[in-house]
Figure 1: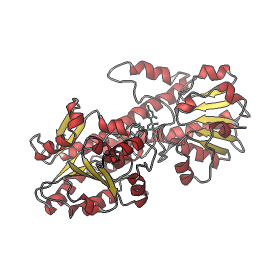
Figure 2: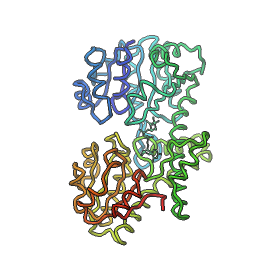
Figure 3: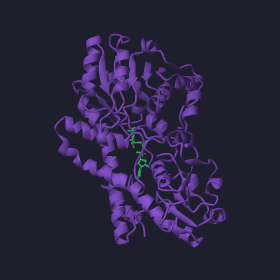
Length: 437
Ligand code: UGA
């Protein structure tokens, strides 16, 4: 099939490459010339494992091209909208500027029978609004909402073999023509038994925000338990292991630590609350305010713990933060808890050096006032305390004896509860975890 993908960020670039890998002829369209130039020579404009290899592989087939010219969408039968919906400045709601601009620019290039497929995370009600626009322009074209559940760091495999597909069509019916067209787009993963659910527009939109809200709630739940464990002298990692053995609960997303960040979970729960308010259902989501508050409290807690670890003052203390990305295997620093903690420590008088295998470029643009050092060993030289804040494999496997010879004080705070406390203590370190004795 001929497919256009509008928006070539974390979502769209991966989606375009994966659709070409599935055998389709794909054009990726974005207004950012720099992104398009990079993608055109098979360079990913951000770090995502496996993406560059995939870009090279599919570009060699001639099935994938990139452009800034929206008219290249003409001739495709399926158009995916993959642009971002960031948080509005100073408000909780989602900024719909990019979705609206992409949809409007696409309209004049639609042909009879085309499918416009929304993948961005949007406030419920967007699909039916855009559907009206599409039908007004081209009465035989359809709009489908097909939310994306990919995780950064696993984006390629999540796109090629997702847990499930959700198609939101206007009448919510399996017999809708759009269902057969999307089945053809996804025929390869569907043939391996991937479940596919057909819903109406609002249900499909809500599936996405509900899923992210549930994940955020699960993380904040275990972080609230961490607060309790700290007060009671218990160990939240053992507690998570034990409750996670109940199938109904499950161990995944029960890792207590410095909390969730990134370009999705924080802004999605806020936009969800804002939308619920507009719909007169704000009471239903007031618990998400608490989820958000628990999450933000983690950052303050780590600053306080670091102060304790440094003997009661941060002034002039040399602190090395291991990890800047919001999670490992990503160079994304949007709302990164690690960087936000690093910046707060610096504000309170510490001299902070940040290291990260991939995210230093993005981090230094966001917080130019912090010091950055790419090489892990050099970053810890003469440090008064180390903070492991993003659990890259490289940091999980650090040797406490080797590092002990470089720092000036043997103090470490494990903000992700991934280090073996016994091992570090045995090597002479003062070790603090979160929610652990
Ligand atoms: C999230 C969802 O997991 C995806 O399903 C969704 O498609 C995506 O948002 C999106 O809306 O586009 P992502 O933001 O890539 O994906 O990251 P996650 O793996 O969900 O991690 C989010 C944050 O939670 C990270 O900061 C991570 O460190 C933190 N986390 C995760 C914890 O603190 N504890 C855990 O147990 C798990």
